[in-house]
Amino acid sequence: MIERIREAYQYRSFLYQLVYQQLDQRYHGSLLGFLWTLLMPLLIFASFTVIFSVLNQWDMKDFGLYFLSGYLFWLLFSNGCAMGAESVVGNAAYVTRLYVPKLLLPLASVAVGLADLAAGFVVLAGLMGAFGAPFSAALLFLPAAAGIALVFVTGLALLCATANVFFRDFRHLLNSVLFLWFFFSPILWKAEAAPPKAQLFLALNPVVPFLSLFQQPIWKGALPGAETTALAAGLAALALASGVTAFLSAERRFYYYL
Amino acid sequence: MRSAPAERKTRTPRRAGGHARIGLADIGVRYRLLTERHSTLKGRILGALARVPSRAHEFWALRHVDLEFRQGEVVGIIGANGSGKSTLLRVMARILYPTEGRFEWQGEIRPLLDIGSALNGNLTGRQNAYLYAALNRVPRLEMDKLIPKIVDFSELDAFFDVPVRLYSSGMAARLAFALATQTRPDVLLIDEVLSVGDEHFQRKSYFRMMKLIERGSLVVIVSHNLPFVEQVCNRAVWLSGGRVMADGRPPDVVAEYRRQVK
Image 1: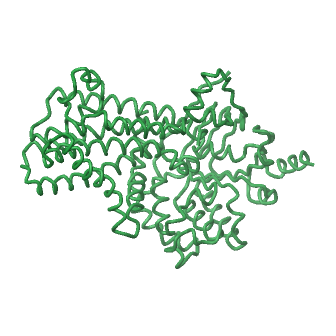
Image 2: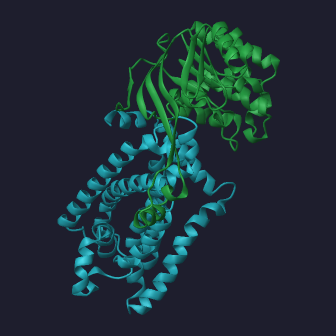
Image 3: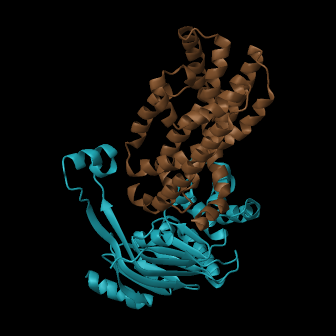
């Protein structure tokens, strides 16, 4: 297994090519192309902010900042899972026609998601400037938060990629689950506002600690709790370990299913 | 009966030359012909609930194949359609992981299985060269140096900076062959690609292959062109029904194959 990870590293220039190709395809020939990918999340952000701040009777600027901080993680997470699920099946040519370490295919999807997160941080900075929100020192925690989240998402992308090879309807199931999961996670509402009976479900929802890693520094201007950070790091390590193990033990059978 | 599949690579420094080797020990490849029921979660669950036995149709594309190829050999693999030739080549290219048996190799393997496998139609010849380099662990700086040779060998001139989808099949084959052979392969695997080119290109690629052999490479060619195998190869393997029927000097193997076919 170590040998195969080392080999994947030797092929890293293929990873750069894949990421470059996927990003290039988006704004192929036009500046607007890049905007199209940003447009959908921006529209969702703007309309949800208006609707839910009114519904929740919550100050629009404050709610906007709260929502965006969680939404940044959510986009990384959900796109990582969805694009990860497609990464092997969608790039079947690289599996059935030549030899490359297949591990790089989901990794490229996650790298594209990371580029989107970077764009999201730019939007965040602009919004904070426009709202006159204070830039606190806690924001310096965000690279660490992004790093922990990235490990988690990488693990899940590997799991989703593996599942989608063997079960082609997995991504349809995944999209439905992600859609519901979004509303059942404290992104549009605060965890503290949930009724006591729902606290158990919140404790079982693995994305909650990750949301907190982003919400605390951005919205509260405070560092996330040490316990939350440790929990997120533990979940991330678990996800990565199971993702890599599942992917590597299944990849030799991919050809037969593509 | 079923041995655990294992794969081992003996590390060799790059471009050492003269270390090409391929070893196939009791290789078997089993395909399952999957139905819709087996490839979806819904199908699996419904199938399990309805207690439908989930037996997929199976067949062995290769079975008990023992072969060893060494540097300096030009191996021609012959056999009827569906005899397992392409599957064997895919195992050697490491695309297909065998169901059973052991595959060992030394050196850089460059498959030339079909033209599309090496080239992306939307990219230009030059971009394809760099993609090829990334796919085959050729450092970018080395590819910078190889580009003039590739342009020269493929005779593409101005077309080198045109998207590959606009190429004729001969042009694409020339580029694919140039990429595979100019990047110093130790093992070259060829699946009927040469038949696309014209006579001039076939002669040129023949000489190029001979040069690789002198340098210590190993070439394996799948071909239906029996006179070609007799002329070019110094070893021939005849496959039938996924098994090795004959292995030896090309004239003998080809004669035996011809006798059997008639």
